[in-house]
Image 1 (tube, chains in turn blue, orange):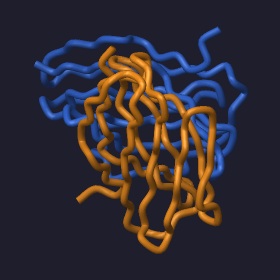
Image 2 (cartoon, one colour):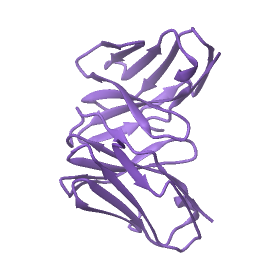
Image 3 (cartoon, chains in turn red, green):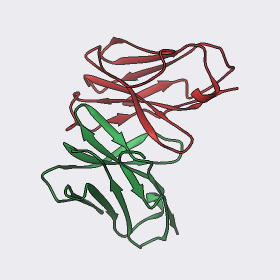
Length: 114
Length: 109
């Protein structure tokens, strides 16, 4: 059984378009995250939700909007895509919001903006 | 520079050898975690060491933590070809994990 799944796995789109990435976890976790991994492999937190409530909102352009319809789902919508948005986006989940918990990562969504 | 920087950036060893990589961080932490990322995959949690621990073992993994130097090391003993991956440390404070840039390890058969 897949623990954290993301769709789509690959996303190729043109500048200016709007796109969404979906994430689902079946681990029963309370906390979910979005990370961005750039071409140099640096991984940066973007957002975190705990029980559908936003608890981490890093310095991210407001073109990025997360939505958590329930504890098991966290989606990421990106408006007016730019070349610099090209990256791999990872969803993750953990048992709780605190740092004692390990995080479980999805397989990633490779976004290419042309 | 990034919180949780790792050294070296890349490492190439023969199967059976040990691989050691280091991580430095900048601020006080609750704990430090290490993750592995195989090519094209998501990260997988390896081990967590709390700020009051100095050393921890898990199978062929040994992690040390020196809070006075704000540094940690990960040792993989008797490496296997399957250990080929990128390894990331993540320093933890508050609700956040802050990842380093990773060490790419290549284990040659």
